Image (tube, helix red, strand yellow):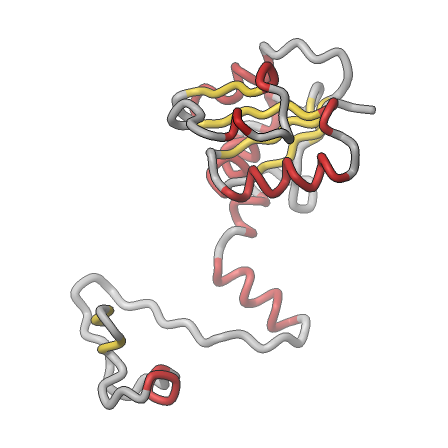
Length: 168
């Protein structure tokens, strides 16, 4: 079985992936590489042995850290944050030989492009799924009064720009 490397930040996404792999009996193959602050609680999890948790202070260190891990077999990489998957996608050429990385159509930068909400909405629409309409306003631009906004019905508000403490 190939080693599995989970990248991301200390967050419920990482914990959920660890738990799922544990349930499949794969804990002995899992290694964790976190970016940002040193882990505060993930090392307490029964789903990952303490010696298999590493961290780097920022994404700019992740490629070097991965290359220095010394795995003997190709490593399957599971990214649990948008930032880590985008960064690895941009540096795929430095990791291709040793790591099985997520990709979008096998092209560099493909993942980053797929993270665009506009691209995701177009793909969903092309597949026949209904999508919410999106509006992009320039900084300082007033919200038009004629935008359809469902909060009037959902919250019974007369002014759809005021929902609870949120003022649009």
